Image 1 (tube, rainbow, N blue to C red):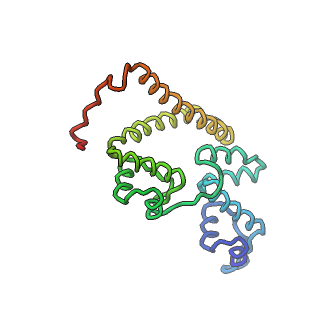
Image 2: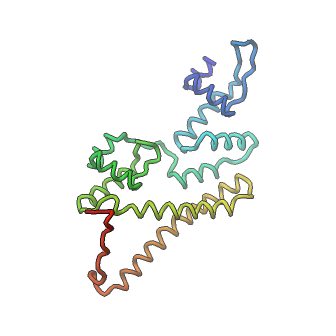
Image 3: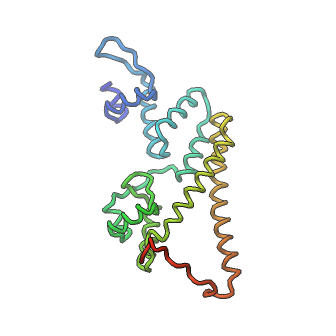
Length: 229
């Protein structure tokens, strides 16, 4: 265990956890306090770490990839799916809350307001990536213009309904097909969904604007009494 820990560059607790999750083969025990690990475990541990850090896969997904790799299955489609959903497979610089506020100009109270409205949705709790920073800067401009976060909460409400329908459709389309084919189909459906969201919402907006005679044609809707300015 000590030799494997040193060679793989991870603590013994990590190796024990991987063993418990079925990610590493069981060692050959020669006594209650002595066990020998296959040298291939070093590469396997490093592979697991790489898949977590660079491709942001869960341990359950990594286990499936390892099982398929052991059977000689090509892993490219799983990595393609991960990159399509979560972005390119490279380590991202993550900011804590203090650094994020400093980068965006948002105050902690403004950030809290955005998170309560589900407009700021970091993939890791209290850790913000470059996309979060870009959105934070945009929100700051909107807040300075007088727009409150709760006025924009419909994006999260309607977005969640869209995602629910997309996931239901994915489950119907992939429920009975093999895992590798499922991954390939899902990757393509993710691309299609992104195109549909952008195209339909933009076209609806464009058609609405094109039908207006001037910018003041329609009166602004009244604010709900539950959302005072």
